[in-house]
Length: 414
Image (cartoon, rainbow, N blue to C red; front, top):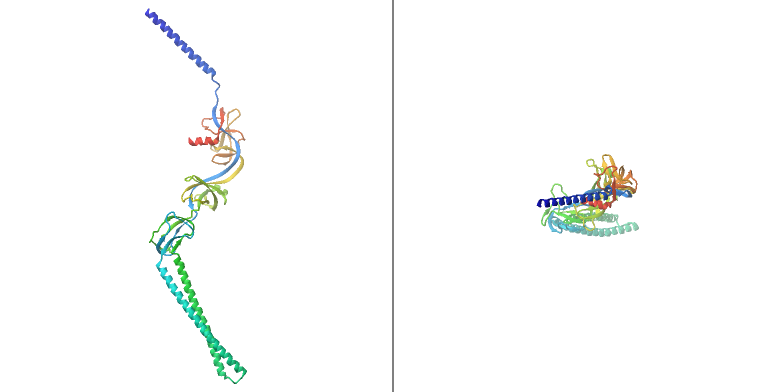
């Protein structure tokens, strides 16, 4: 009886297992029957369009002051006053330091005494001239009277008296001329003394060291009481007072490659990006050397960058972007679509049947994001801009037009 029950349970289990197998088979068949036809792989595409393109040159360089000098003393002296320090902004002509020069102070006192003495001599010579001129006038009048009487009444006055009066008149005239010469000599000596005093005063004025232009002090070399040697002598190792940099305008030196020299012109606008400040400032091509260096094959080019708000400081790195040439309404494709294989440049084009076709291109102007198409494509065609490593010629795909900016951002994040 017990074995009969076991046999019945076994048969029931077998039947249930068969039903499960049948159900699974139907489910798989139904799933297979409901599946649609296989679709091509999805690819990102962009339309071939037209816009203005410009060829640009971007070069990184360092901001340097428009002019920078070490300020030396003209005359040797001790630093008596020091009015500047690191970072001090000065105006043109502002006194930065005052030197103590005892020798020149004594020399000025001596010059003043010499001028006073020369003035006294000139005054004395002038008085002497006035005296001899008065004496000359009296003697000349006496001679004229005697000579007139001798002519009007001959024999009344002896000729000897007339001759003596004439001789005294001529002698007095000679004394006048001599006094005039003495006065001129005294006046010349006064002028010499005044000129020497002016020279010494000019030298003493150099005891005040002034700023030759407006700028900022970037280094200070001397302290109070330090002896500054005159910076005009090559036989001494003179120490400068400070280093002064002009900070209201900067230079950006750009080594322009030989192939781009023909595009550089005075006044060309330049976009100067300073990454450390996260700022982009306007500049312009101010000057260039008009020759190409043999060792680097580049041309020295300078861009003037105004600094009215004082944001820029010396030594910051900046990226200068110069627009070399611009073309309007040109056919272009994104650079992501272009494949360079040796000398061959090509893109994948999605045909009307959603199949991939390879097109060989001839390119013109190229920027960091786009390239001008001279031949090989027509406006409105779809070019593949997504990853093409797994794509093949004549493969069926599903094109999906994407926002190129968003795609580029996604690629950068990867």
